[in-house]
Length: 150
Ligand SMILES: [Fe+2]
Ligand SMILES: [Fe+2]
Image (cartoon, rainbow, N blue to C red; front, side, top):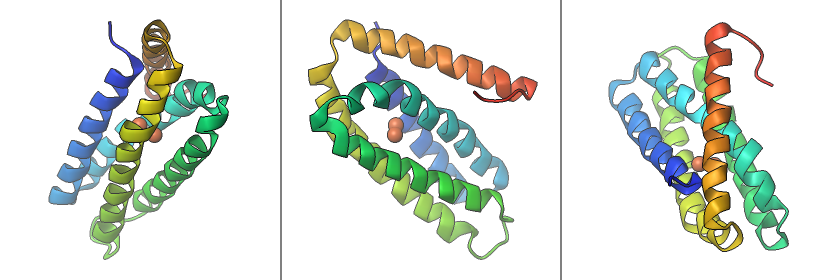
């Protein structure tokens, strides 16, 4: 069965590809595809994945760093969202976002996942995958119906 690592890793790959696409074509449409992938991914990790890991002393610093990196990405996404494609800062900010996200993904996969594997059992990692999928489903529903994301 699929684990939380499988799902997050697959989304990381999709996110990198979308970021590359956005940088290549410079369009707002492509940027919003990145945002639509990144927002629920980060929120899902913050709600479902990180809280369990944060409880482990050894992982506290790593997860605190991960939160900072998420905030950095969110700030950049917010800034880019407020820009026009022709804005001279569009490409530099998008490039900055890609660097920041690539770095975070690397840290997450090499450090966070590594340590999490020692903490979570196979069953827990599979259960977490289901919770994550469920969270994303309700998140997407709320986006479609315009409801609040709580
Ligand atoms: Fe991630
Ligand atoms: Fe993350």
